[in-house]
Length: 133
Image 1: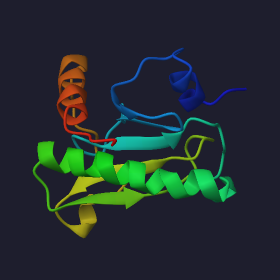
Image 2 (image 1 turned 135 degrees about the vertical axis):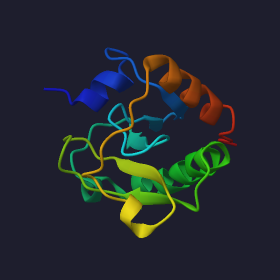
Image 3 (image 1 turned 180 degrees about the horizontal axis):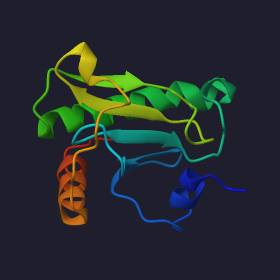
Image 4 (image 1 turned 135 degrees about the horizontal axis):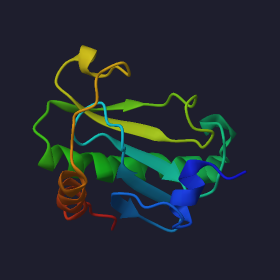
């Protein structure tokens, strides 16, 4: 059975897309810890990040880096925190989360209440700043 992320990659479920390449996709988390919380995934469905072959894995971080720079241009914060949990969805992914202090990178925070229009606007603003070249 396909993961929810594979369904997003295949266009079966919509997302607030930030960036896309042949191998990777970045989109806003629909249950964000904070505004701007973004997920970066390989398009190929692989459950565990350390099961990704070296070539695909080695391209994932530079892709995430470009997305993180774009998020930081849009969301005022000190850093973009990075987390790899790999428990909640059986499809490898990286969380990019705007933070100002260590305690901001927690997964028991209450999600901000953003409307679909606010999510769409935020995705478009970050997307406009991503340089994939």
